[in-house]
Image 1 (cartoon, each protein chain N blue to C red):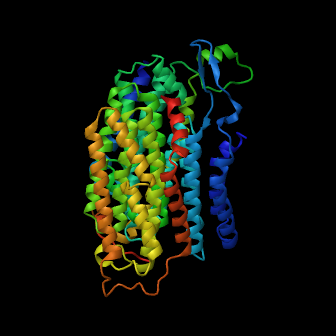
Image 2: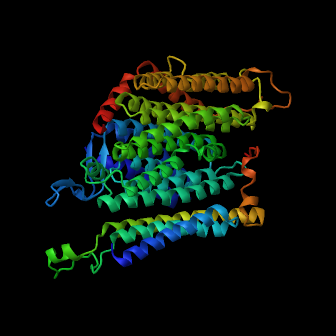
Length: 484
Length: 128
């Protein structure tokens, strides 16, 4: 059933194009988008693990160097890809479901962007070709900009342009880095490049190799929203529609882990690589939570908290052991669900009150008890409160840093988790528990049922991963064992 | 390294540096975007230079060609394929950027980034 592997990219890509072309037929577009969105999480679950060689070109033996090489683009599908693609597929379904139920007349271009982004991150996860990954990295950036620009929030176009300008500097840098690797190895296949590096065919101390690391690393910082791009990343979350922001953050997490795993396979022999990852991750954790503390716009607050959580993912991968990388990837999976839950939940509050300033909100517990309880659980999961999924991954990260001999990093991780808890409780109190301001109108506004449904599904996942983490971590650990 | 290849590489470095200067320091958004295009083209030119082979032939195998002669004389085709894709993506990015600039120019009546992008950090109102 390996034919299903390319379908994970082709289906959303084709759906995007067809919806864009036939968007004037509103009902057909809605039905088609809904059916395709349901298929997105099903395809990876139904597919077998394996490799797919485009054009049928399997690896060949080079008679001169006696090394196997890949003449065509290869997709690799393992448990890691399966769980992440299924998760982003589910999230895309939930977001599209919310969108379709929220609007009578749907926008074809907006649905196009949602499907395009999903196809791009799926391809980034699957591909074993670094240039192919770059192409979809660019497509993803375009989709993200489009999702932000399409929102009805003030200054969304300005933010989209700002993000695009930074991206247009980051992407060519990454391309140059790929060019350096191509110049040194003659290949863009990641397995071939990694084999050349690990078999000593490439001088890892050469300035060209180090320069390629610096350039690709810069592109990764942009894609991940790690410092110095943390402000713009949280900015685009705050300017997108809440359900769009839920999907955007999942795109960020997946592009982050896709690129960092590629870099890990190529550059893990360089000691500076892991130091760089840990340094920027710690910076993201500290800056993310510190800036979240000062926000009064709750969407921006969640955006900064999401950046801080990205630091945890990078930390796990940067520590470089099987256990720590497993913890980092598990944290990535948890961040996708938890942050999506929070964005959709806070989006429900925006929907009901037309207000994003926590100082002007209050007393919402009485009006929206379901949303408030689900948001509370989501916030506690993000802060790492047991027995929720965030607790399991953060506990693993603390254990991993202790076992690597860095107790100070463990302490920092715990402190940042406590600070996250404080930020969330402060915001939660302002919105739900303090007395309702007199001028706040919430009486006649209902939260859409689709949002409650989406939050319920995500909440079940958060609790399930918290109670049964082994269901995911065992498979991820096997994958990590394979790349180490 | 062939002299031509070195000249191409130096040109690509110059394009990237000029582009970076323009993208970072120039206020006019159109000039900024031209600078960004310079960076992209510099990266593309660099990859083209990698595929350059002195005295090489175009890497297209014609029916009457000797395959062993072709294998030793053809330029490396992969970089050209990559650059072609990269140019297409660059054009798409450029189109989206210019579309956004058009929208913002209508709103602000200026091409200054200091004016256009200054308000994004302010607390915005939510418009339904």
